[in-house]
Image (spheres, one colour):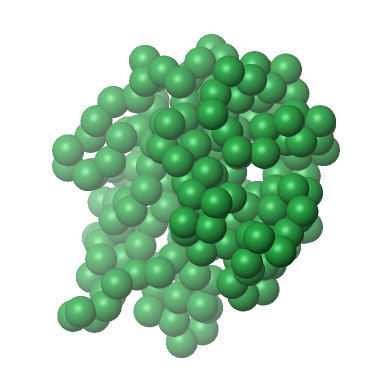
Length: 223
């Protein structure tokens, strides 16, 4: 992937996949189809992507809305914060715990998919994508257990399984390792900085000053 593809400012690496209802890197499509087929045939899990490729502009809109208080801003425990009470560093860290910096989202690569089990969704229920849904007793617990046992057969892993002080745990987030790991390494401080330098990103000046730390803590720190 080139710098524009890595930072979501190009779509030359992704394709729309109508049968999977998402947009993916062209080299991830076959693997997700195989994973989806196996989930249904082995466990009657209807794997559904609720988010896959996301471009720079969409990520920027999410970032700016959280900065301005137009979307909920949460602390690391999931409690809502008032952005007006936070200094720029605190706002940056609160956003990054749950949402990526524009240009630094793994979803820009087309290798990342947020998944649910559509067959397990009760009538009238709207999935929230919160860890409790994938924990014991949660609506997607069977999906969580099947993915743990099976996803590596198809080249997928979950980059956010534990709280390491960066991105919060996301049991719904799958990554296609053969392409995601090289993409993460290629997303350098210079690439990230260039992506936001000319964009309308709230808090940009302080973000650029902290870019090396942001890359280490919120891009490279997975597990």
